[in-house]
Length: 245
Image 1 (cartoon, rainbow, N blue to C red):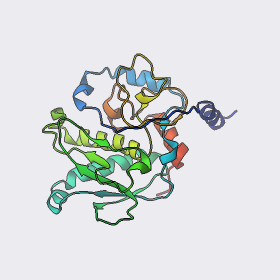
Image 2 (cartoon, rainbow, N blue to C red):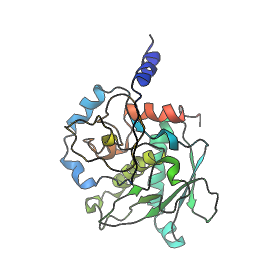
Image 3 (cartoon, one colour):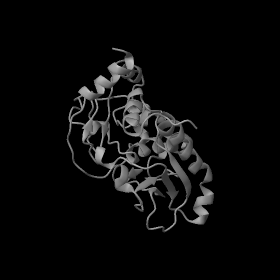
Image 4 (cartoon, one colour):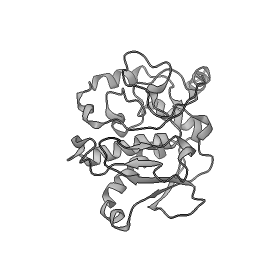
């Protein structure tokens, strides 16, 4: 069996089903420096096809709109931060699958808007998050929330805003595509002590993935904004291979 055939066979063997619901909140960057990065390479070397997706909320039409629920003043003020966010999504999910996000301008009140609305908040009580997975946040005000200032939530990001904003954007857009936290899976090992959080998936693909950008137990916070090899497999399973651009 060739390599691609073996890969697809492993995917089919790994399909299991379970489901639940809830909200999602991103991990605090404060703890990222305390984790041992050596575990990352070991996890990737032993990786097989993995992931946790909610198959009922996958976007069916491309492109998917993205807009910012910001005042004129804030839209201009945070131009650099908005650009970091867009570049992070382009370098991760768009670069490695057929998903396409478009727009990235200020939101309007169009009742039939098809896409993701991003708000900003800096609350110590709630970090960056989505209010569900995939199409559950279609045209939902506050469906995705970012933080650009870090005065209250994760103040360790002050002075390294680009790193944090890029990592947050890549992780949250994984949720926007329909992918749940990896530690929510029922086969999460006892070595991962991060609690399940947010909306659950209904489709497990292969074994549990420590290296996933969607895993709070990843020794690199939000995977340093990079998809694991098996995040890419999951993205392509639902959105196809990268498009020629």
